[in-house]
Image (cartoon, rainbow, N blue to C red; front, side):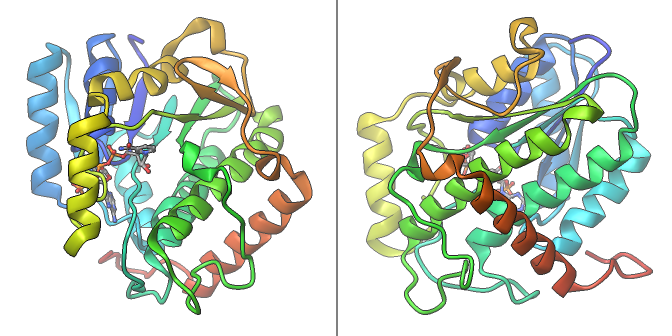
Length: 289
Ligand SMILES: NC(=O)c1ccc[n+]([C@@H]2O[C@H](COP(=O)([O-])OP(=O)(O)OC[C@H]3O[C@@H](n4cnc5c(N)ncnc54)[C@H](OP(=O)(O)O)[C@@H]3O)[C@@H](O)[C@H]2O)c1
């Protein structure tokens, strides 16, 4: 990975941090993100030490906001104008319905719109040049989920795990649509399920929801290092350099649900994402996102 730059969103903890360490140790230049810039800088220094690698950069951006995604892209322009591998890893489950200051439901905004928009911006920038990879961290939670494109925020009947399952179904549909759209730009797009991983995932939720996840993780989950293996594999392995539009589990190709492979639904989802992003409006002239 020497000479390659990898952007890992949600690289401050859990699977993303372990992904950053693993790829940094292979010689990649890493840019990792989290919401708080100071924390992201601190984690970047720690990752650099742990991996005994070259410089690791940490950037702060709230990716549940469209303007936060745009601000990250702008900051990247200074720090790392060319990204060879984008790992769309940041994601969360929220037990309670809440909208962002931009009026979007949080799960939809963070788990779907952020990877959609960030990938769009970076692909548009990466004109021609060398092949690039996009790794979307999805989940087996997409199975059994359905997609409500009229009300993706599920404002009428919100349930945390349904909204989460829907968001990961949407990420898979987007993965297959992105793979097709970006094929002639030499951008390879794949998705994965990392396993059930003991991270901070879900723990910050109030009440029994957060406690339940914490206990389940303590009993059944694998380590973040194991959880990061498939992300690292898809970001770096030569044998998957040409793979695109695939879903991987434990570093092997796997089948995602039949619904996730519905290309017409994927196109309607794409249009919905474009509408949601457009509804927020253009980037402000002086960026404060
Ligand atoms: N853990 C599992 O069992 C599991 C299973 C299947 C799939 N996944 C997926 O794996 C990915 C990583 O999860 P994880 O288990 O490592 O979770 P985690 O420990 O909670 O880490 C989540 C990461 O996302 C960042 N993040 C959260 N909200 C953000 C926001 N609004 N803007 C920007 N960054 C934000 C966090 O950074 P800060 O807190 O520093 O902002 C953190 O680095 C997620 O997409 C998750 O859905 C996890």
